[in-house]
Image (cartoon, rainbow, N blue to C red; front, side, top):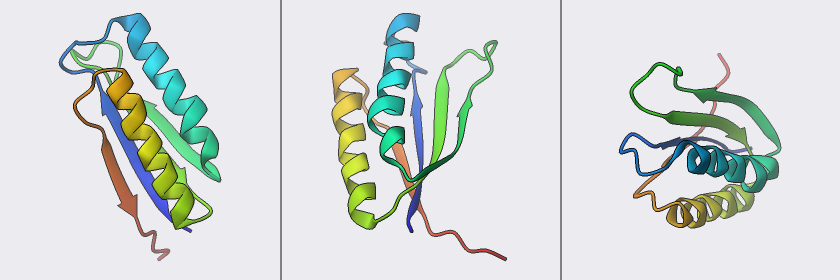
Length: 94
């Protein structure tokens, strides 16, 4: 089963705090909720000069992973973000 790390940010300050929280909620509602498992969610410290968030997601199939990636693109465009980092991982247990 494929896994991915999704990282988003607001380092450019384009989003207000309310918009940033709505961006995160939409990622949770529309992307993370489609994963088979969410292994973790991480956020930058509140005293950092930038805002970032990261999810570790595990999907049932490559098709679901690709559909989730397309959803990320749609959401980031809605929030006028130039990019999001989507890293596909092939876990190896050692």
